[in-house]
Image 1 (cartoon, one colour):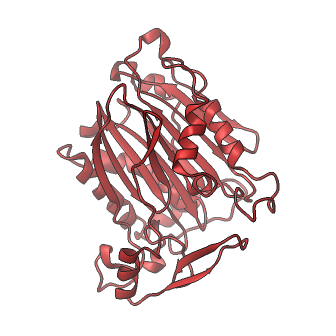
Image 2: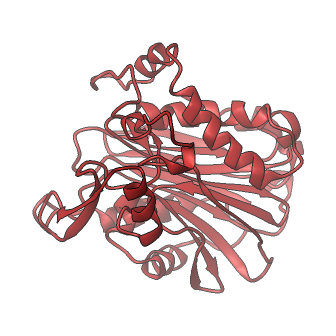
Length: 340
């Protein structure tokens, strides 16, 4: 696999997105041979998104390695339960980025999550919210996730059964319609957002906003499946799945090249970002984060060298690397993967 990520604050005052990239050999416990990639789009603050990135690998390490799909689902639920603990306040404050408003509770702070868990040619997807995973299969975009929005019939039914309602209204910039749980959150599933999960009589799957992820399992095919693109909704509100796949695919370097993946993602975010806040009626102003995982034939040690460019200016967070064997190991990856 070759992998890269890029993040852009866009026109927002704060950056609330974050990402997770842990190739084979970096996870602990029964999951050492698995690679984990994810995008987390925070709202109400960056703290819960950063908490999920910090804690998800630790939670997975505690789970048995019998079924990756079950483990990833359980890990999401454990993360959500951890946010209810009184001791989490100090950690959330610690995770606040410099200059941002501290949060010591997940009551009004939450995050989407889309994760891709890979071993060999097996791939597990798990997600809550509207950050997406899209597979490029011989140039065609294949949706691997479906956004969790309040207006979907099955989501509306759960919300109303929990005593809530779905309110229709205009987007913040008036560029279209959107739907919100009890007039507030425009997602029907998320980590955190505990004010929507406070009914003690209801199970987690029955709350107004649920942390139960949708999961799926598939086998990627060498020579057919080219890459997986994970991205926050700042990208998807500006491009369709196919448009994003076409854009990235046209800019990727030749297979085996360790440079250029990051550049392609940077150009994708540049294309999505509006020139001014009013240019597209508010579209293209959100935080944007994209992670690319490209499937490649095994490469040699000489052509496989993870690296990180860290934080560049105010706009971009970039990282890329190539990883095809646990023998290339965590030591080499410490420069490429930094947990908050």
